[in-house]
Image 1 (spheres, rainbow, N blue to C red):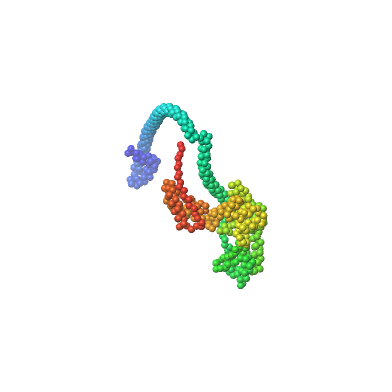
Image 2 (image 1 turned 90 degrees about the vertical axis):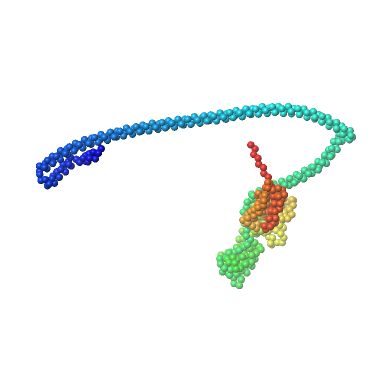
Length: 549
């Protein structure tokens, strides 16, 4: 192997290259020795050496190739042996894995068999125990039957003895009292009759109280259902009439030279115009809501037109009055169509439309009348009365508010006179007259209208306060009640007029519940400001739950 580099070097030098080198080196030799013979000898020796070297290189190359082939063959044989051994090892590993898997499956099957055998053993023991229990029960039943037969015989015997004894006593009583059986029966019946009369009276009072409670409950359900079915928007409106102006210079133009414009406007409309230091606003004030609306609309038109002088003011006011009369009639017709009330007199429709500009406790009276009409019709339908007549009564019950500032008396009397003059029947007239007075059962539709009127006036947001204030007040009532010990839940109902409190039966008794009720009422009096009164009801709740399986 040490000669391998030399062989490779010699192999790289070809004979031609060797001869070329020899010929090129001859001038140098000639210069040194200047002998031609020597040059010839050197050339021949070079040729011989080149041939010998070529032969040696060729032989060395042959031996090297044979060596390499032998090494490759040995390497291939070794790789084949390694592959065979690796295959055998892999086959053995797979065989071992399959054997282990089969052994695991066999063990699992054996375990299942043992489990089933244990289950079957337990079932067999259970069946044996059940059979033993059944045998014991059969013996007990046979014994009970024997005892029952013996007791039945004994009872029969005693019953016969008792019957004989009673007969003997009856004979003795009859002999001692000197009364026959019929006379004794008559006296006994008389005594029983007197006792039963008292008992019947108590039963009647009991049932009357029960029927009264059921009637109250049914009435509440009917009212709540009707109010829920009629889910109208809140009808609270503003009662002030203001007119916006573009700038404060417009105030001077409205007043006019020496106040002639404002005097002409107040004379034409019958409404006072208030001009103060409030920027951008002019206030119109008057007791007649229709005239106030005429003044507001007229002033808006004058401001938009820009020409403000007495003759123009009269022209605009007259034009606005005509437009407002048409609007009033249209509002009255729309309200009548909405509740499906037909055949109203034109004057009644006009007065009904005037209610659109009337408010009561910040509630629009026309929308209130429509709401009362719907609620009256629903209530009448639920209790078997005429819903059409009830809606008519409800729509016209406040018609007197359209003219109560023009005539003397309250709006019920004014409305009743107005309806009577224009051909409405007695039921509708009495509904307008008596829905605020002492109610009688002679006119049931008046009771319906009064009930619907109270529902419309007392529902959340209808009067005085907004929805947000109403919700806040309800939450305040409930939070105060829940702050007391033993209270689980509290619910404000009837627009805050009543509070239902659920007390824990585990933490409170009757005496403590009564004290909690009184303390809550006192807390409301000390912490809240409210109109009227608030009813507090405390209920102790006991709840028991069982599950049948």
